[in-house]
Image 1 (tube, rainbow, N blue to C red):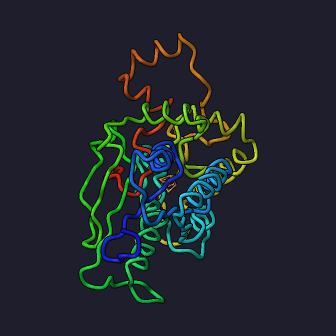
Image 2 (image 1 turned 90 degrees about the vertical axis):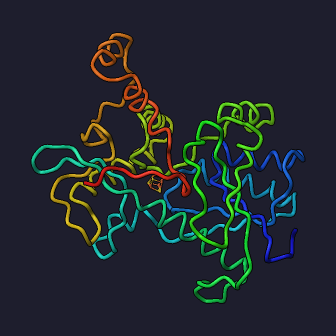
Length: 297
Ligand code: SF4
């Protein structure tokens, strides 16, 4: 397999729970080895994710697999740079008429999918410097870490030179199975991977950031204040944008754990799955390959 550019196995590694499970399943021989691993860095990952990528780099090195770290720039800086083209993050928006809206999510495709695909084309022999065109007949098998609880997100590859493969689905592993497997392997502290200020965070993730990573929390709070009117050049935001789903500034947003009484009251008013969403965040999270679209603001 290795060396045959028309038939490469490439693993898109997000460094979260499922991706780390795939890496360890390769190490223990349950899965075959891939030829390349690609990690897309948005520039705004928490320190824990960068530490995990470094730890995985050692593992891949031991397996003889090159790990490529690719980037399309710094999402945080671009999103609030008035000189930068609009970087569309799925903010929660309060429209001028008081109604609620949601920003479109294009950050994943711009800061993860685009640099990954560019690297794949390069590995398949596309010519420098732009690596646009893959030579005819060359294809890669792309491993994506969806687990059985995410089966609804599976979609065929959108580009001809890639065939998607989902090794965790083939093994029938759920996210919980992956977590258990990581525990047993000594990688139990692996965290969900997402940008520091991702609006998909639930209250649990926001609390963890505030209580355990105060510098990253301060960074998210400052960013939240900076995006109120949209930030980057391009579409002018007529309403106001927020990172927290309450559409209240993050510094004072209601992120603390609800008491039993609060929970009972809230569940009487909202559907149960909405309660889980508030606490645990969007179950879909951020994958470059998940088919997902928010309501446009
Ligand atoms: S983690 Fe959130 S902010 Fe970062 S790229 Fe994904 S959707 Fe966008």
